[in-house]
Image 1 (cartoon, rainbow, N blue to C red):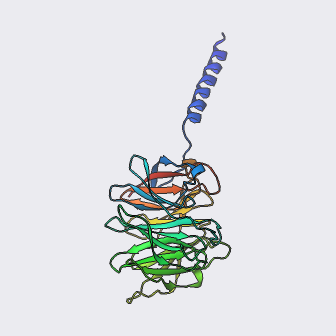
Image 2: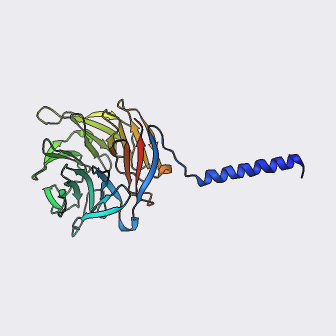
Image 3: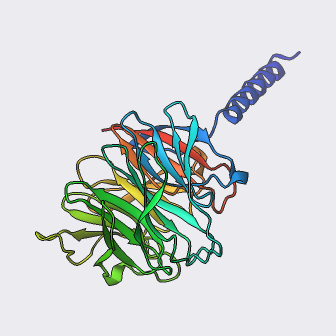
Length: 318
């Protein structure tokens, strides 16, 4: 064989081997400060196991609401799922925007009690529910039938839960002991413009932070000395499909789930942001974010992709 031809064949063989190696290596798009994305649990779409929101246990297990399955589940650090409870089905669901009954935001108390929102479009079931360890789910606060309780946060010191209403565009407070809800903020920036207004919600640095999905804005509402709401401040814009989020550390940097685009964004305290995870990393309509130490949890519900609802973990570099 001529030496030049042999050299060309050798080069082609090497190139083919390199291409084969690239094809066998999963594509990733993770960007700093996130690294090492990995999926620890895949869920059964046929059973409606589409994770909507997340709260974390001290051992790193993830408590998840499974929206259309009307269920609460726990994924342990090894990726094993245990279903904890299923909410009663409404006789005639008529949930605003969605139609079907959905379990939404979740928050965990230090004693292991879980609080979560349930929206059915019916007066007998819509509101905030509680699940005590070893107990059965019970409603502790009734919401209007035309409301859509979504993001949820717990202030144990004040004994209050904060709930974002995506349909009516308000934030309510509910006593952790149970009782009637109170509209805490009805700021115009919380309202929907098409479908979902106020959505993900967190308490941070003497303020309630909330995302408006329709407007793609992250808002900060300061807490007054007497607990009243100040005017909403826009902290970031240009976040299409903004769902839930969490803070990356002690500062005001945020990691947010952008549901419709199957992306997660890192939002700096000055409002600038960039994409840190995409569908190439395994996201499939991500719904929420939780940060535990240097680990970021991102559940995906596959609402639109209809492919691979899952729980993804990544590492955040400090």
